Amino acid sequence: MFFENYLVYPAPQYPAGDWEASWLDPLDVSFESEDGTRLHGWLVEHPDPSGYLLFCHGNGTHVAFSASEIAELRDRLGVTVFAFDYRGYGRSEGKPNEPGVLADGQAAFDWLKKQAGVGSDEIIVMGSSLGGGVAVDLAARNAPRVLILDRTFSSLPDVAARHYPWLPVRWLMKNRMASIEKISDYHGPVFLFHGRADRVVPFDLGKALFEASPSGKKEFTESASCGHNDPLPPEAWERLLDFLRAV
Image 1 (cartoon, rainbow, N blue to C red):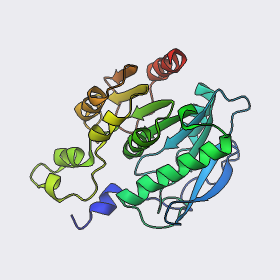
Image 2: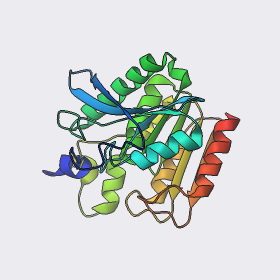
Image 3: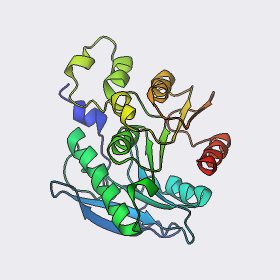
């Protein structure tokens, strides 16, 4: 429990990673969270965007480590992508904790709305792993156009209980990210992908989150062989594109 924050937020920082990323041509963005913490992000523009996507990355990465995934989102989905780092990650200041990280997500969402000149209901929110907890929180509070979730969880204590079954983690954990409770407040379209070979976030926790969603337009896509950190398989991209076209 003493190391909880380190385990949940290992927070890789600058200068590790490809911060030049000239092939991606990102625009460096600096903005503030609600408490004044300075945050950093990358705006990666599409020349003719069909929409705007806010990307919330996982706990062991930052924008420079996510460059390939950001490029794939831009090119495959035809959208402008804003990826940001939570406090303590990459070039963002501060130290991560659940209230701060969720506030950082809201600040990034608000920045993208203002930059794009669009309403909340015109933004796609995507969260991967830990970022799924941020994305669900944003969806519950802002009602975005679409919520995309990639190998995320019902709650952090649910994940911890699988990894440390002999410890009373459900009682002791400070970081909760109770997505399975929050998702009941979002009724928009939901697309969720999970791999059955995921050894970090067990498959059934992602399925439980999907089943808790009250959305009338939702789709669950799975892979038998995909692990937690594997790239999205081609069939998942195809299903996601079809889903976005449909909604």
